[in-house]
Every structure is written in structure tokens, then in C-alpha cells.
Length: 306
Picture: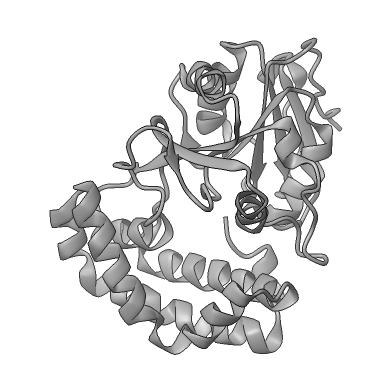
């Protein structure tokens, strides 16, 4: 059996967490972009893997990588297990299907120097799957708030779940929601409410490459929505109670929100219009999944999406 790699780089400048449900070797092509971005700045990469596949060898991944195995765990649980392992003053996370440019780590560190008071700096997310309209719909539903067009250093309440960087003080007190794992969106809102600066910046970005047909898109929408609702049920706040109350009208509300954000940010407006039927359909699936999550809990959705 292959021994899981452990990073040997001393005093890393940046720690990047990636939770993967696909494991090795499926994650390899995207992994290479993560590795390049981290090695360029002397950082470390923590990969938390729930696939159950054997880990790669240290020769395959290099000295900057620590590989954690937790077969069957959900993405939020994988991140929960990864944060305590990080060692750098700047800590980030992204997903196993998000491609990073080679200078991503350099840009992240430069932005944290530019904004020394910022606790969180989020990246904008480009759609890297641009062929099918259902993929565009999946992107707009999931990334309405962190799509490009935000400008530089925009103050936000939450910087997203896909590609985000933190100063180390900002991850202190990040706790799991029951047994479901951490949800960074809740934590980011708590930081904002406590007076911390949470920003998002167009100069820091990733490419979200996720396709697989309509059935797969529906499945992803279902599991992500049910898991989110289960977390909301576990941690009731005035905001979450309002969200629960608005569940039946979500397709109308979110279609309007997506249309407004696409228009304001001038991001592929034609594609958004063409994908509108899929957007409404996926939002309908989301409503049903959330209602199930509120009533029955997370079920198999904790580990059902990637």
C-alpha cells in the first residue's frame, strides 16, 4: 500500500486546501495546476480525499503536498479535517475541478499585502465548461455571486465557497455544523458581522470546469441544495429562517437575481438568456431538494455532490 505523502516544505507562505471526491489519478490534471500555483510561492497543498482510491506516491506529487484520506466523507467534512493541518499565514481552499493559473498563489499573496486588514479575500469564478447550455445554467445557479465583474477589493458579506483565501486569524473559531462539517459561508458572514473585512476581487480567479450532462447537473443541484438546507436546519438564524420561508418562491427570486447580476457584471448575457429554461428548471429541483433537507435532513447528500 502506498504511504500518503506529507509536505516537507519549511515555513510555507500559503496553504491551499483541496477536497476531492474523485481521488488519484482522476484529479491529476487539475492537481498539476494547483501544485504549480503553490510551488511558485513556496506554499503547501493539502489534499483531502474521500474517494477511497490509493493515494499517489510522494514522487508523483512532490514535497509541497500532504494527502489526507477519509473514504466516504463529504466535502464539508473533508475541509473540516484539513484546516487544522495548515501551517501558513494565508490559508485558502478551492475545488478539485477548479483550474488555477500559475500565478494564482502570487496574486493571492499580493492582494493580502495590499489589503492587510482583510480577513477574507475571495476569487471570482469563471465558467470553464462553455459548450452546453445546461452547464451554463448550472454555473449561473451556483456562482451568481462570485462570477467575474465585481471589480477590485469589493466589500461583501460572504466571499463564496469555491475559491477563497483567509488570513490565519480568520480561520480561528471556524467550527463544524454538527456532524456535517464547516460551511465557510456561515463563517464568513460571522466575520463580517463582527466587523472584519471580507472582500472579493476580480484579479484573483479560477476556472470552474464541471460538466457531465443534464442528469448529472440535476444530481449535483439536488445534493448541494439538500445539504445546504440540512445545515440551515442545524444552525437557525434570522437569515436562514427568512430563506426557509422564501423557499416556495425561490425560482422567481433567484431567476431575477441571476438576471440582474449577469446584466450588471456584463458576463455572458446571451448565454444566460439562452440557458434560462434550464436555470428555472434547476431552481425548481433546488426547491424540492431544500424542502426534503429541512424535513428529513441531509441523508446521502452529505457525500453525494462534488
